[in-house]
Amino acid sequence: MKKIAFILLAVGFLMACSSDNDTDNNQMQNPIEIGEYSLVLNGAGFTEQRVELFNDTINFVGPGSLFAASDDFNNALSVIVPSSSEEAINTIEAYPENPMHPSGFEANTASFFMGEDVYRSENGTFELEAFEFNGDMCAVWTGNLNINFTLNGSGGETLNVTGTFEVFSEGCNSDN
Image (cartoon, rainbow, N blue to C red; front, side, top):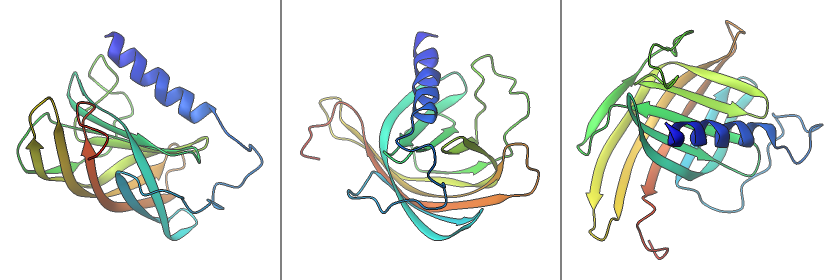
């Protein structure tokens, strides 16, 4: 339960911190580094906007595995899929208004955060193409995603996020 509280606190902290509160979210800067998540945003005022996110955690929470990532520009992604170390195409569903699991998370859902805006999943896929365990507690997840989100409470503004990921566990050497 402490891990869940820590993850929620970390996501809240990432959402609350902003280098410039007057910056329009639609005027994102180009990232300098290549992240573990290479994403493209369309809709909600974006056209082919590239975003690179860096792995914050892959953790096991009540309903499944939490994939969480963020960047220095106040963007963050969280996806919960059933825990598995096998290739799978997970169907992402609409984020429930009132999650049933005590953790507040629901399997097969996702959220995308841009500054103070919170987008919740409507539908899509999160495909785990490969899982490799390289020994010495090093695991690598690779795959792609294509998720449609709506702005929380707007009932209409949609955001499509597509991209790929290659995420290393904390047990991997920094050389990977």
